[in-house]
Length: 112
Image (tube, rainbow, N blue to C red; front, side):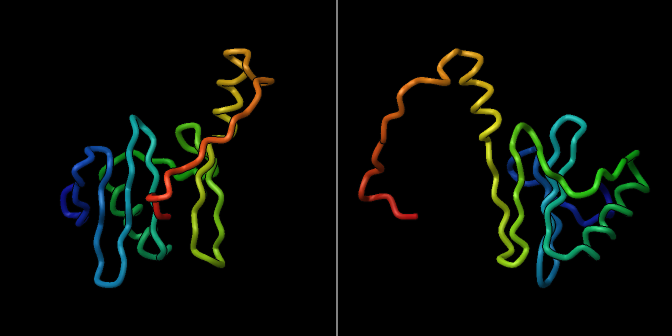
């Protein structure tokens, strides 16, 4: 990604483009790309730069990636990821959808 200012992280599927006031995260998985950032103008500029070097198709806002659903709360600037559908699929696959649930308490030393 020469001349785009994008640098690879320790994880070889994750790249970051840093700006003075923000950053953009670019995640790759095989032939899928997810671009995350707060500034759409900067994201659009990066997509234009990348499309000059790579064949790309913009599929718009992501609703799901790698089996995870993405929910946005723009008023709070929060992204929530859910694997509920994937978990339901696994429960069905192993025929344990009607299994009894059991609470598992977290240790008191854990802080969230």
